[in-house]
Each structure stands twice: as structure tokens, then as C-alpha cells.
Length: 499
Image 1 (tube, rainbow, N blue to C red):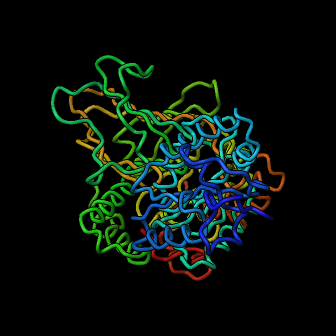
Image 2: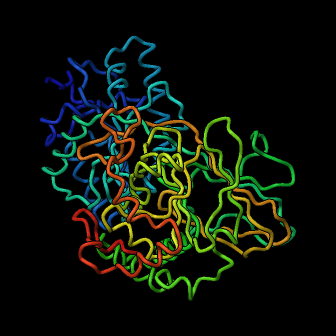
């Protein structure tokens, strides 16, 4: 493919001449650049966003390699320029060039793919920006795992271990991006509303600064249709999960420690080890002794769900021992574990539960008692306490139940103060729209439209035997830990994610 320009303006840097399939000329990226003539448009044009602060020193090294291989102007450091500014400028320029009859601009826009390198919070940041743009043909997104959990990349076949940053590795990844297939996933809107307290704060308290995935989780403006007089209203979105309780508290402590002492968090293995230690320190493995019962989910809030669009709200009974609740969109949580699993035939019939699909408009709601309960996920067919699948879910916090609780979305936590003088604190999650991801093999995520996706397991005996839905079953399951036949570490699971 001949992707050279008739001049030097807009050509890729010298080392990348074999990679003209991916290079975008300057005049497309920069409205002030002089337009040049191309023989052909690149067949797989990419815009690359990299969080240079992710992965220890890997982010900065990855930026250097991509800029050596591609046009420097199509590789962006997210610590220097926000993706919304980049994409707004790019798509405005697309429209201008297309109105002037530029066929290359039309082809590049049609074939454009985005690459984002960072943690789950960084990936969610870009997903949110693309969703907010409401483009008629939004570009699909590939994710490079540069974080600690890397649930988003793992869900779509991009792995969960931090990559090498040499040129051959980057070329290989670009080749995968070119061959990757598109897959739609649901996005979820979250709104939190509370009456303005007579005293005390109500703003979300992030670990020293607002996380990327909370970029849209802000108080709505006075002109926003969601605004109500006398209330503080916040809104945001997520693509992987929303969680509340002990797991979010451990994550909050981890992020706070990393913000205070970034020099101690230079690689993925160190980060995972620190995360596990904080889980022990916070009592996540002995929650029944260290965790106040007032912060158990049932004591903290009433939970209501709407199972299908246009349905009725109904109360969801939460076992009193549940200390953490996860609303899950993708089949990966805490570094690649699948809390929902695949319900057996009896669960499908008796409780109207299905396998987790990423595009069915339903979110899976799972509960955990403590970290030992989380270890069930490492056993064959293991899963958390399946509570429900829902199109919408609402948490109504009880008056004076606690001073605060911990929440997180897509890996980014915050501490949420709860007013003492009012019982109208509400967090509601509802289906919003869909965004398009790029999927590579092996892809963990399943589409409801894929005929090969399992609706349920035909052999449900193992699922029923390993199901820990009831207190008695859980106590029995706890005794089985360590038995070789019932508790094995799957090869793809990193033991450092036990917390």
C-alpha cells in the first residue's frame, strides 16, 4: 500500500514507513496544517491515547515507541491533553474536510480505530468521551492493559498483563487491532441525589484527586433536567462495574496510598501485592470481626430493581451477611475473575437468570460476604451470591445508617458521605446506550446476538453443587477450601488478586 504524501508534511516519522496502514497525515489531525494529496487513505488509521502515569514507567516508554512508529501527532499523552479536546477537534476537522469534498477524510473517519493504554479508569474515561460525542458512527476502541486489574482489556481478549514496549511488540499489537472485530457493549448511567444537608459535606471524596472514570460524575448544572431544587444531584457512567462496600473500601485505601507515595508503585506485581496486603489490613478476610454490621448492605440501604424496560420496581432482598455488592456489566472483576459465572438450567428456570451478555441491557448484581467468599471464584464453576439481573437498580440509604460508605466505578473508588438528617439519599443505575469495543481472541465477553454464546449450561449439577446462595451452603463451602478436588487455581488467574 502506498501511503506516502506528495510532500514531507503529514508523513510518518522515518522508522514507521512500513506502517503506513495506520498513519494519519497532519492535515487531518491539525486544522491549521496545509492539505496534501494522498494516493490512498490508510486502511486502519488509529489515534492513540496513552496515560503516561500508568504502569510505572511503561506509559512513558509506550508513548515513545508509538511516536517512533506512527505520526507523532496521532499519539497523545493523556496527562497533557484530554481526549474530549482531541476528538472534538478531529471530528470538527473531518466535517470541514468532507464538506470540501476530501475523499481521504471520509475514508479515514469511516475506518478510524482508537487505542487507549492505561488502567480501567483511563479506558472508561475514553469510553465516556466517545459516548458523550453521540457520533453517528463512533470509532471502536482497543485497550492496552497498563493498570493493576485490567478488567476491560481482559474482557475483550487484549490480556491483563502489562505489555512490553519495544517496537516489535507494538507492531504486533497494531496487527491485532487491524484484525479485531467490533462488539457493542452496554453503558450504564448512574445518578446520585440527596437533599442538601444542614451540616457536613456530601461531595464524593476521591483519593486526593478526582479519578478519571469519575470525569462525568459531577454535580449537575442548574439547567440540567435532572437538577432538583433543594437537592445535590450527581451523575456519571460506567462500562465495567459499580461496587459498594468492603471491596470499594480496600480499593480506596490502595488508591490513596498510591497517590501519597507514587514511587512505591512502579510495576504491576508490586501493585497487586500491595493491594492484597491492604485487603488483609482492612480486615476484608475477617470482616465478620472488623467490619461494623451497620455497614452491611442490608443495614445500609434498601435495594430495588426493575428487571425489564418499562417494568415495575420491586424490592431486592439482600442477605444480612452481604458486605459488598457488585453491579457487573462485563465478565471480569478484580483482575479477571467472573463473579456471575454461567447459571445452570435450574437457576434459569427457577430464578429467570441467564449467562452474562455484554449487550443485553441487563446488569448482573452479585454479593460477597468477605474475601474468603471471593475466593470461591477461583474454584471450578465458582461464583458470588447471584442476587439479580436488572435493567435498573436503585439504592435508598437509610437515615443515619452510617456516616459514609465506599463506592467505586470501573476500578476508581471514592468515599461517599451520607447525611445524618435525611433519608432521601438515592443512587440509581439505569441502562443508557451502547459503545463499540474492539475484540481479539480469546474474548471473554459474549454477545446475546452471537449464536455460539451459551444461554445456560446443559450440565447444571456442578453449578448447583458449587452454588453458595444460602448461608448453610456457604459455611459448608468454607470448610472445603484447600481440598484439591474442589479448589484449584485456574491457570489464567493471578493469585495476587486474592483480595
